Amino acid sequence: MVKLVSDLQGWFKRNRKKLLAVYLVFFVAKWTLTIVFGARIFAFVKDVIN
Image (tube, rainbow, N blue to C red; front, side, top):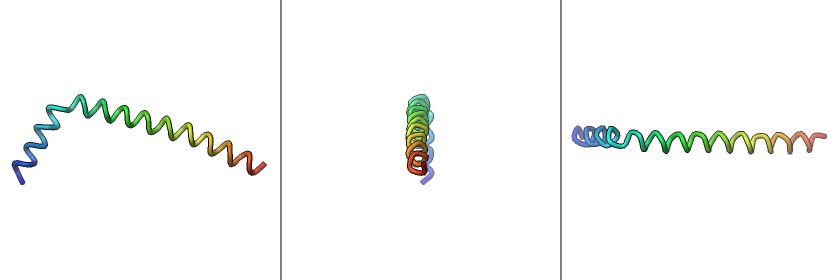
């Protein structure tokens, strides 16, 4: 178990920049979609109410 943890730590240290880039792309895409679809749903609900 200890070897597995140390192997994982080494892997994260080697791939830190790649992981950070992937996470940032995921984060930006997620919030962009959330804002776009949130605005569409809000406009739809507002239209239905009126």
